Image (cartoon, rainbow, N blue to C red; front, side, top):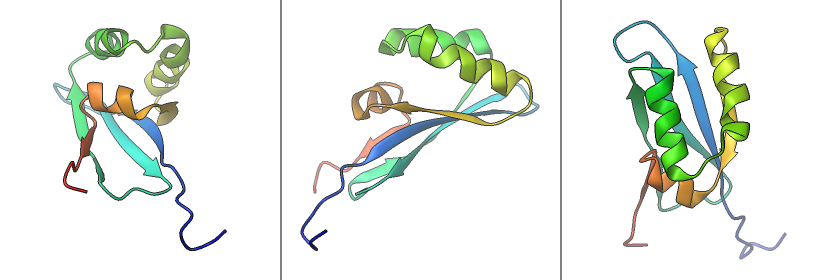
Length: 98
């Protein structure tokens, strides 16, 4: 790989659950060329609230249902999302000055 080769970023939606009034914690992590992107964290009051946001963004329940089941069992779970989905979910900040 030459020094000028750019590896396009991949985005992961990370989901975990803890105690408190907003137990569903969602963040975005990136792999690859991440310049110009910053992951953000959001919290949701319920699984239903989070699922409604995922549905509104166009992420099918077939993609997120297995992850939510795993999270409810006490484990952290992730799945791939696109840059557009991450932006629409407000879990990534894009630096438009780059």
